[in-house]
Image (tube, helix red, strand yellow):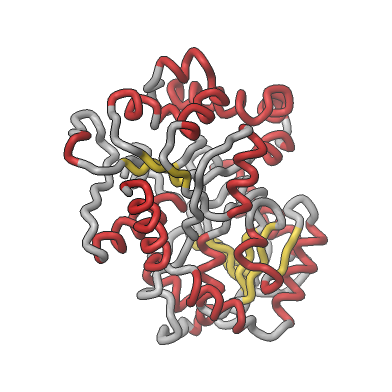
Length: 356
């Protein structure tokens, strides 16, 4: 498994997906290495290469040029273009003018200037983002989106005709299960768990609940490039006794917190799924989630959907989830269908189909 260099230093949903899938594949007696330092990679030691994040094709291109080993891609195809276009100032203007692919190309160049990254492939530098995504997708033995909806978006955006198998996003059933004891300090709270940044939309959530007495706890650290946004959230929260932001909670402590809380909200501008929403739902929380992305394929009619751009929509969804009974049907669906064990079995099936 070849992952981005910042997989552990700047963890995200893909970090959980990669680490959890690898761990469960090893329990199935599959030899898996997660590689972020690929400077001396011995391709001949492997039967397959598994890439992640098709939106970063420059990380993939050098390897497919050097190696003839078949490869798969967990696409994790996110599309933040709507959020980028709605931002004020120069960044919003640039996003509206450039569009998704040119904006992603610009971000890759910006990572060179800001983070000291480098462009890994001359092909990417010369041909750009769109052609690079199409090339790595076309030559993959198999694409592994998290949903049929995700693949449909990818196909529509890049006119891709490629074989694919869905591998679900999931929860760790060893952590998130019905035997967990609740942390009573979060009894009947409304939670929002995730990195604090504009895309996750915590500020609109806070604004939506400002004129209520509902207990809101936001758990997450500010993204490195979104400190100003975090400060805006913090300034509003400090004016309300029923709201708070917790910067750090161990992942192992989340099951007890979710078990005690009533509602989990993720009003993001885009979610392929929302791992924290799955985890919260597995512990019996009512789930409020964005209507943007691929969320409906997972949560069906068992969640409360909101428009991230509409504060009234967020407020109505949260209140509806708060006053309703707990959604035990959603909990059963997640615990039965969306576990990392099941994701590993789906991944292994994909590997076998390629090798055969």
